[in-house]
Amino acid sequence: MRAKRLVQMATCLALACSLSAVAGDDDDDKPAVAGQATPEAALTIQQQHAVGIIVARPLEAKIPDSVDSQGVVLDTTTLVSDYGDMTSATIVERSMKAEVIRLQGLLAGGAGASVKTLEAARAEEARAIAQAQFAVARFIQHWGPLASMPPANRRAFIDAVARGRSLLLRADLPGRHSLGSLPDMAELDVDGVRVAGRILGVMGQSDETQSVGLLIGIEHAPAGLGPGVRVPIALMMAKRSGLLLPRDAVLYDERGAYVFEQLSDKSDREKTRYVRRNVTLLFGRGDGWLVDGVDDDDEIVVGGAGVLWSLEATAGRVVDDDDD
Image (cartoon, rainbow, N blue to C red; front, top):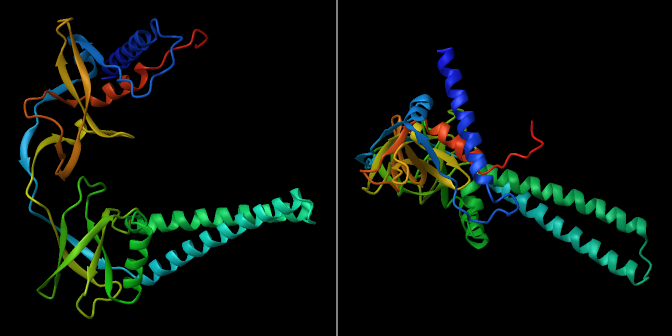
């Protein structure tokens, strides 16, 4: 086993060095072009076996009509408090910025403002900026879906919640730490009565279940639903088809989820090319993901994708002559 690992490490190093050299040939003096295509990996059969490359075709599957979840009614006083802190901190920040600008104008015009007064105002401005940033970050962490609303819509929604006309619930998906596409709607079971809910988005903060949570808004909720009450929730989804891939096949970076597709290299029959394919995550099922963006006859890397990711990350880096 140790020998096998050494062979894999040596193969990866050799491939990374070769791809770096290719990327650097004749282009050492050229700056990187924005949007330039990512270098492709090309492996021989021996290299594929050495790094454990396995390919398979995706399987057709359908998204379930609904997913059972457990919801808890949230304490809306926390929302009102966080929103008030963010609003007031933002107002104080704007006020201090205006004061600094006023004092700068007075000092420049010789109207009697002192440098000491201006520096004190700048210190207060820095403190106000830090407090405003903290308040905004806390609001986003606690109420991310509401933070993404337009300001006018957010104020109206929070006002309805504060006046008791709407309720907020958190619906958790036990055992899940990520979610593909959002469900279309939520349906609460309140003593046998079906109550429709609006899914606002994914919560940015986990609770004691350590699972992904959805923020759900309920208008005209039945009386008696107070903070801490737990109710069953069915997350309803439109019927859609997708292609099922193992979790090991799906990678993620700043551009989103993607997989590697295997392509035959017509110019070099001894090597096989691997290219990136961006996919949309639809729904997690067991040890796999239902995705959109690939075809059922594509050869997708389901084993060894991490090695190709490593090659992709190092292929465009040119090694300097002074590097050891």
